[in-house]
Image (cartoon, rainbow, N blue to C red; front, side, top):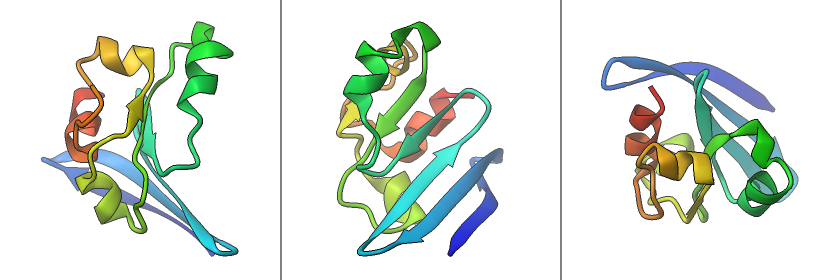
Amino acid sequence: MITMSPILIDGHPFIAVSMQLPKTNFLAVMNDNGYIMCGALDVALLNEKLSDRKIIAGRAVGVRSIEQLLDAPLESVTLEAEARGITIGTKGRDAMLKMM
C-alpha cells in the first residue's frame, strides 16, 4: 500500500509518502526544495554521481513511521543540504524547515 498525505511542520506544508514493501517500509517527507528519507536513500550516489543536480536531501536510519523520520537525527546528508545548514545529527523536522 502507498500513502501520500499533506503534513504541516510549524505551519509549513510538506508531503509525506509511505510505501509498504515486503519486509520493510519506504518513507519520505518532501517539498519543492528537497527531502528526507529512510535508509533507502543513497547519499553517496547523490553527492558523487548526481552532484550536478544539487539535490538537498538527508537520510535517517532505523525509522518505521513518518513521525519517527521527522524526529530522528539524520545519519547522512548531501553536500547541498550542508550548504543550507543541515548537518549530520539534525532532526528530520528541523531539516525540512531549513528546506523552506
